[in-house]
Image 1: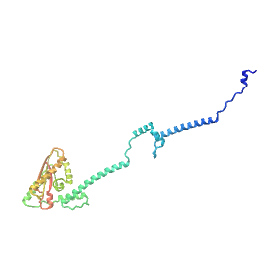
Image 2: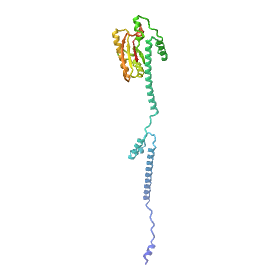
Image 3: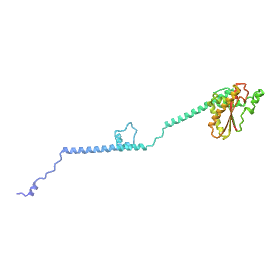
Image 4: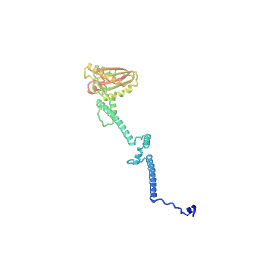
Length: 288
């Protein structure tokens, strides 16, 4: 009879059996799939981060970037970047357009002033019976006007009454500090309002008048004998008042104003021609 220990020694030790082939392959597939999903996720996240931090100009955003921006942390980061992005300065085309519009406005203003000067020069040429040639340079036309004024003939002889009326002591308004004589035909479009050219002429005088603060400014209006003496006096006084009101509205300071309507009583020249009558229709402004 054998002992129990001998029985145990005589029994062969069973070798471990290999796992079933199907279970081993399933485990390998699961591991590979997990590694693939994990690697793809890491690569996708890195791609989204790189795309957001280094955007490129494309037709449309990739789907993953679009999904990332919809997430709370992605949209918050994009909004922060837009908030701190500096405003881009105007491009060159916009600056050029703005500069061109400004230059066009300045040129239009200069053209308006030039047209006003041309119109005034033409009227003076007609008044002094000079040929009007608009094609000539403006400097030449102004020089011709100056020469014409300097070469005006002496006052024609007339009756003693007329000679006394046009003497220098009566024909011209005295002014110690400043004196300006303007043709009424240029100042007034009609007998009730200033013309555009008249406003320009008076605006040019305002600068000189402003140098004499608190002075007495005399405005005298003269007419020709086309109406009765009483009517001409009334008309001349109305014209002097219109000029006074315009200048007073443009000047600041305490000035003393005196408006006088002489009518036809103080002509510069005899009223025997249209040109002479036009010279007698005038406005005199003097500062004492």
